[in-house]
Length: 216
Image (cartoon, rainbow, N blue to C red):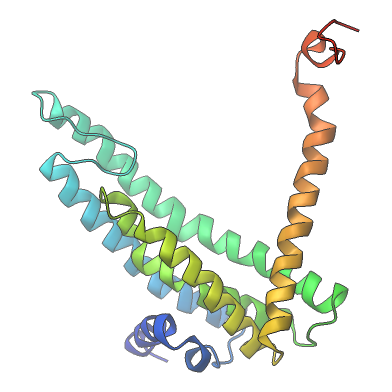
């Protein structure tokens, strides 16, 4: 499948995920599909960021003031823009896809018995669900518009439920239950880690305080 067909699939996934998520992909094909669209998302992110830097406007968390040293700040912010784009689109998201797919698959298949399909199908479903954020992540750079990213993040979850149900040939209720159970288990694990780790990082006297506020 060529780049044009993959680009159409990525776009159509936003509007008709039930149909477009039926494609069977192994991990290598899913990664190829992701990187084709991910590079486009990264370029859009760079273009919008560069235009904002040139105009001296707010870019993400960085503010470029209209002052004589603005060019110097631009030279600092532009490399950050390039690096953040490479790190987010080419490294962070693919790693996140692999980890998320693994967790969903363990919970859905082995704990809840919600499906019998292989890991490749779960990986493909998670990859499909990333398309809204990949194509529209550049919105985070624009003031007063970045709130739209929250809408795309919500739609990403909807696509994940539909794609996971389609790929694993299960119901959307089962897919939603597996995703929710994974989130709950992940939060419980995080709280357990924090509960065990906090005493080792807090100062001794701060941690050993009684309920009355006196050292114990």
